[in-house]
Image (cartoon, rainbow, N blue to C red; front, side, top):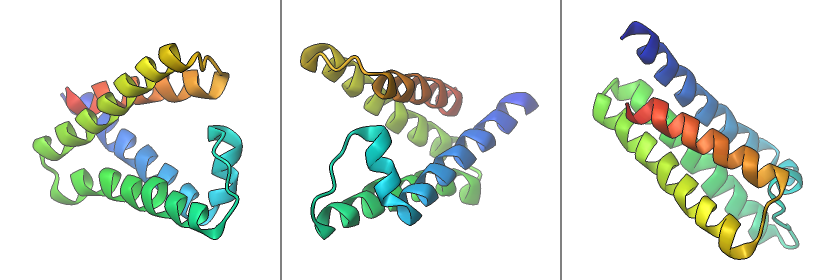
Length: 114
């Protein structure tokens, strides 16, 4: 069980790092995600959602050290992964960055949920 606890902390850390990166370097996110930032509002959205939300999603389980918090973060990742998978198929968006994101979402989601 100690290994899973460690993996959950690492997954939370990866989530926080992703959030910090999105918060500090929002324009770099557009290269990976394909999002186009054409107005300041777009930068705000990336900082808020991909930055702030991901920081909170990763930090809450570490702060509260609660298995329920880890599970909730896992459910979040798995939900995003499921919607991404459906969207990849429906939108025919089989690009490399989408596949990488899907793999990370499923792996981190399972680690956090188990």
